[in-house]
Image (cartoon, rainbow, N blue to C red; front, side):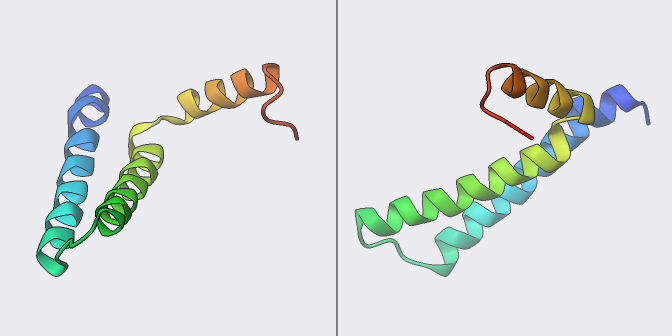
Length: 78
């Protein structure tokens, strides 16, 4: 498979499937009875999505560009 196909389609599809399964399991595994529980479920699913996106979808080059930008803006100091 070409690198373009993997980066553009396969990785986002993998993230979609995993997050979709996590959301489905969250809905099946627990009943949301309050706003606090709804926000907690949303938070867990969001953390899963952000983590998977950072690990699978963002390339090493893009991560390095982000870190360099943060260093210039003085948000990130080593």
